[in-house]
Length: 297
Image (tube, rainbow, N blue to C red; front, side):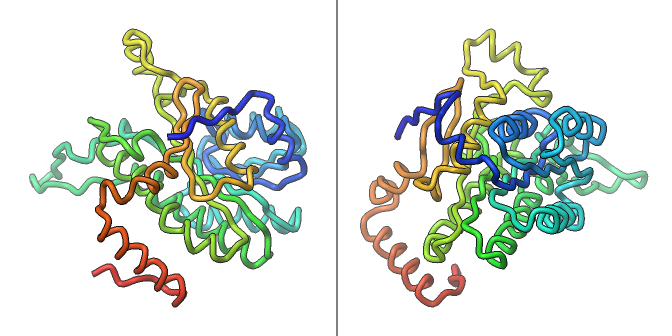
């Protein structure tokens, strides 16, 4: 694994000056810290969130280069309007940050709930819809606008430690965050072939936000690492502007940064086997040459 040094005053942050950024889930927590950091370094930011009051307050505080849009990432039209307005206003979008997500406290998908007749009800799967389906919408829009505008764009998706770990108690969130890393991995080679767009993941461990306020006392008691939102925001900004990073993932724990994907790829023969790795690489090469999805059956 590769440790990365991202200082609070990293010179790479200056590269965001004048860039047009779209971010989802920007009213609170990691998203709000990222909006603030982008604004501090001279970016133009449009952000979407369901929390109207807090979103409007943040945009008013930060000034004319920050624009708030009220809506949900689960609604295509809400996300589309952010891209349409931003491109109409500024003529471009350079960076897209798919950050919105919610955790399992809103619904226990595996708890039994019954209707009035005693029939078992289906879970809403709102955690999956926001945390993965919403990210897919955001990435779809980013790719479409980057390609049509012929922009060397950058996408950063907010994953989680749960993108890699078998975190107990949050199975749907865990599945969704595994999906986020799977999405970016699946785009890694094809986007590299295109040569215009980069996509990366930030994977923070426990972060002090409104989502974790009921658990933070336990983390502190046990001496476990806790991120401040701005520490995760630095990783997001670093990935967004650093041209050396594509198809990577930064794990963030107590303000330390570790790149995970390079080591996973480098050890593929160890965990998949030499012959299987050769077959996988051959299949990927053929599919990239054909320019169409593979048949995984």
